[in-house]
Image (cartoon, rainbow over all chains, first blue to last red; front, side, top):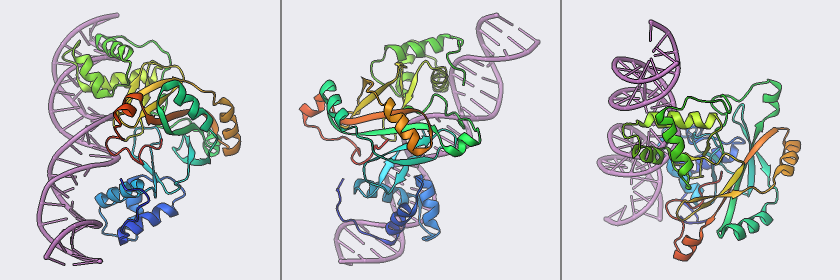
Length: 146
Length: 146
DNA sequence: TTGTATGCAAACATTTTGCAGCGTG
DNA sequence: CACGCTGCAAAATGTTTGCATACAA
């Protein structure tokens, strides 16, 4: 719950942070674990989960759900941005943000909520999957609203 | 995978659909099960899950993830709309949609994706939680991006 | 030494699957 | 009779927790 607080950087935590910073995809906790293991072979999954939660609450990482009900993913890009998720290969690409701030005020006014932020995710087919003509993989149809 | 197809309406399925239609909140599968049980006492959770998946793929319900990594929620309002989620009580309120369609074209152009849709979720505090001064409950801080 | 971090394994929660039985066309 | 739907229980996932040990200040 501390924010931007300095946290103790143990070897394991540094390794997790490094993996996250080096990743240009959006790895799940299990993938982070797998990658960290190559550097810090003995690390346990609980440590990875604990560390990821720590990084998230320290504002050093973002946790994302890609819409399918599967594992949470992590993103070292902590600046405000949104994602496009491919229905074919489940790949997520960062997009630099469109301006919804005016809309936030509008929604706040109409709903009575004090709006603090929003999460926006686009769905579609990436260029590769368009080329391969691969339809949505797995039970992706109809699923995935928010 | 069938869309808008007529599906066989067994008593259990009707019960699930009725519960969903009557709910003005966004119940989890477990909550749906609980409510359906009052009408159809012997129903098993597997049937509820199977039925919900069926309704979703038939376009008669929407599956939503509220951003916390917890259970999926279901919404009988199948028209395009978005949500505001309260960081305090986790309640989700429907909002009739803002127009992002122009933005979809823009994103499609810049990303190369064939955009088919988007999910938008606002975060904030509902009027009740603002009044109660209740801060975000549970580990909601920092979590919840998409 | 005192507190925190780690690793392991077990616990948990949610969802899916296997399978036998039932009901209906 | 054939087939799909149901209920139960077990499996599969993804994540968290308890606890003893290992570190570090």
